[in-house]
Length: 165
Image (cartoon, rainbow, N blue to C red):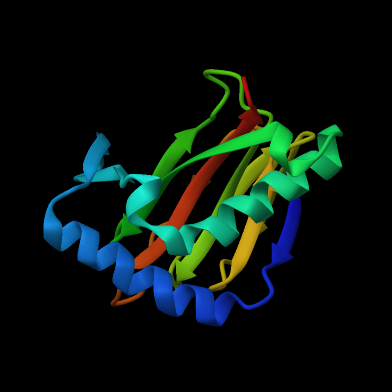
């Protein structure tokens, strides 16, 4: 697992958060994975969110450092996780396709918004989210998010990175 705080994240998140809400208001999203009373994944086209590009570039750059090559050798798919108070994400993996790295980037994180739990190397690791933080891990690592005990939603972006075709 690798944890990094993106430089310039505060300004980036000030662009991403309203852009996300604008796209929801426009009704352009697609939703999937209905578990525990909410859709875990919210998909918005990359072309509708130019502010997301620095996040995806960072994910590809770290993947290139871990797996060799240059960032352009990799592509990143993404979705939003908008977790309301009381919400959580159930245990799962991301090893369905050709992913090399999975990661989460935090856009909005109220206090007591839950932690990312990742099982890796026989250990359970807990990561406290922070706006601007990116956590990268192996796609086959079992992971989940503990309940959001705050009074506000936590907004994060799930990302899978694989090689370009």
